[in-house]
Length: 265
Image (cartoon, rainbow, N blue to C red; front, side, top):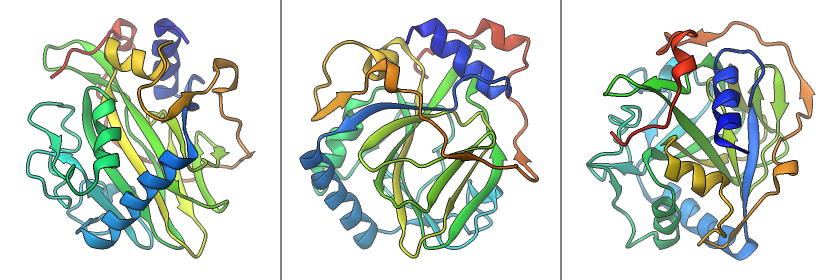
């Protein structure tokens, strides 16, 4: 995929004009997934999460049902229940503080450049997030129009855990890293009796971030690139979307035509 194709795909999805919904980009080797999953599960059992069901939570506007928890891994405080800067679109003064206890997780986080957050999202049995609309396009502190990409890495999942994007229903496999266009209207549901656990993070769309996700160089982690012809994930079915919760747009459609690379902020 070229930068121009990615820019167009993200922008069109953000304005519900087709574009990119979900791409599968990278696949972890089995031994690496097992080691990473062990750390993630241990962290969710031993550490303190924030509760998305709390009315004061930054994500509570998505109307969670059931038990939905979040561990904020990438911040300045080191507290995993501190979501205060998860969505400030800044990379500055943030890091993962738990590398000594969770080295494989630290290794993964460090590999991705220009992150603004990195979270563990736990959807408990029979839980869901309502259909909602965020925005992948943002205005930088310098006033330029750029994009924020959202990546999902399922760690523990099941066939009854589904992601809805613009009416298309997708099932994401454990060990695969997906680009999910969160500018699309989207929702999540876990109908199973066991939890669904995803790593989820947002990155500024810089040249370096593009090369890590779409470049030709072999990854320096035990994972492989999915061939471009196989990147577009097929939906398992379509569903009608009901009422949608929306955040105000950050960029007008006309201004989106000036989309460019992000500068680190």
